[in-house]
Length: 132
Image (cartoon, rainbow, N blue to C red; front, side, top):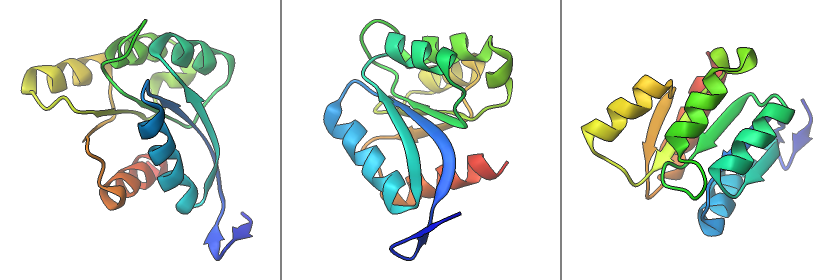
């Protein structure tokens, strides 16, 4: 673990699947400030699934409402792959309904974070799921 600006560098591989470039940039910045440096991005659910099938990530953070595949579909597809059976798959969304949260749980989501993002709560959730 290298030190950068007094922050311990974390080498977990993280994939952000989010169609909003502004939100992707914000998530990435929060992760970088906490020491994560191995971060990749996908602009929609289809690209996210393809990247996650090519490479094993320690954490996938996905939006729900995206073109080509929803975040629920992303999680369902990844849970079929042996590597992703126990990998944290987190949902980051504006959706707040119990019905949608239940769909996320059934699909295999590890956690649910609602937008707008609270950086402290977000990074605490990321660090928690990566430790387990």
